[in-house]
Amino acid sequence: MKDHTDIPALMAQIGACARAAATELAIVSSDQKAEALNAAAATIIKRMDAIIAANAKDLDYGREKGLSEAMMDRLMLDEARIEGIAAGLRAVAAQADPVGEVLAEWDQSSGLHIRRVRTPLGVIGVIYESRPNVTADAGALCLKAGNAVILRGGSESFHSSQAIHGCLQAGLRTAGLPEEAIQLVPTRDRAAVQEMLTMTGLIDVIVPRGGKGLVGLVQREARVPVFAHLEGIVHVYVDVAADPEKAMRVVMNAKTRRTGICGAAECLLIHRDIADGLGADLVRALLEAGVEVRADDTLARIEGTVPAGEDDWGHEYLDMIIAARIVNDVNGAVSHIERYGSQHTDCILTEDDTAAQTFFTELDSAILMRNASTQFADGGEFGMGAEIGIATGKLHARGPVGAAQLTSFKYLVDGDGTVRD
Image 1 (cartoon, rainbow, N blue to C red):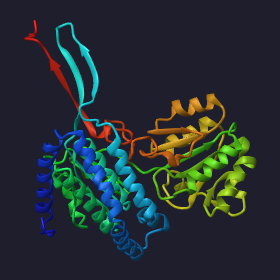
Image 2: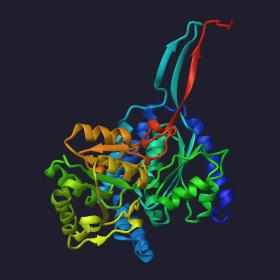
Image 3: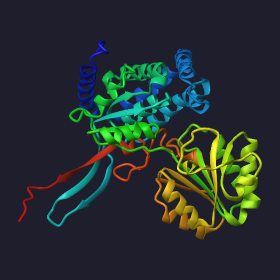
């Protein structure tokens, strides 16, 4: 696997090794998987200095490419974030093993006893961009669900991902599991992505995690089934019945805590009746925090705002920028989100149960929130330990994709010499 110039041969070998590993993983014990993940977490902490050094190379590369501050933030690893990666591995290790879980069980009058049981998907291909922590999250979750995984990280995180991947493989060795269970494509060559998309005999599902360009490419060209993770065009609607203190706290956190993650707010919708009061206060607070506010209607009269254009609605900035629009009521907010949203995460701020119910019932986003920051749109915050991403499609997996979502199921049918009439 040392020749990285013959990409088809390289990927075919990686795929064959993954398929063999998947066969073995499907029957390993829960204890072995937990041991591998805990050992990987310990190695992450032990090799922290080496990971930070590798990340420094990636940060230099990102600066040379002219990445935005938000993208550089996504890329950057420090001690706290590396400790968070290790904690995520330990959390996944501690979770119940989804493989073998009985989802349903019943008896038929014919004498059959039927169980629907979780099983691994097999081999998962994960294609992601700049966030190096995805290397650990995806590797851990796929292993927990009994799957082999082929990881193809972004060119920006090349060295960081390799360093983290080495820790995962150390954990596999400690637990006596095949190193091929978690493989990282060892080249920046984009031809490797094209190969992954057509490896129908070796990869069972592709999970793209990144911007609209990456996900669109995968959806257009993949012959392997895809879990869609579209961009996070996240809306926060401030209703006329919003509590001002809660609204201020949630809006500021949803936009400014980390602007480069998919749960960051990108559009603020404000009920017309509070536009000159709470709405204006929110806009001014965002401006004071250094956020560029692209506003329409009377909000555009607030000093420091920028007039919004049509392209600002439905735009994922991943930066200190937010669009702000006045709507007539909750129905107006719903209409705007239906037109411009990406069915990722949307939030209503209100004390009115009826308005909240309308928002929750009429919208079909993967995650809908009330009076809570959209930055909670994260598998770890949902109790999953980690996630590969937020799936916005409607088939198989939706919302945070954790270990349980990386399984399929089969039917186990018991009889006693039972025959059909």
